[in-house]
Length: 105
Image (cartoon, rainbow, N blue to C red; front, side, top):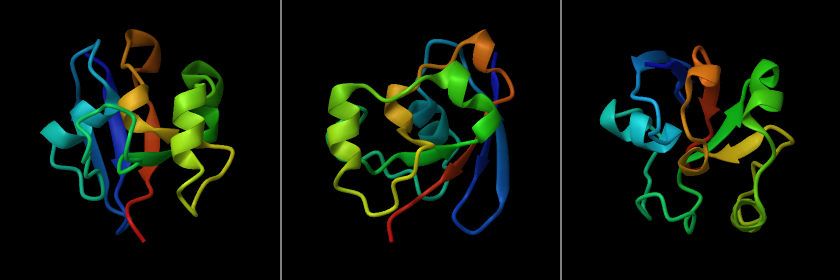
């Protein structure tokens, strides 16, 4: 089970174990991580699960796909580390990943 550390908008770190094959967003919702609203339920159509991936994990996570990139364009807090948590599938290779929740501003 991959371990994920979420840094909430208030700076609090929340570390959870999540089943492999689930999305990062599903793990956040199950753990009630503040700032992950997941309004669309993981359909990549709302950007309410926007996170900034820790730089050390960018290569393993990979870049956003075309639809994800389009959704991120609507958020004013996009950086080169931006991803939608619903589009990151947790695997053993991501055990230990850390992300910062952008949350709504």
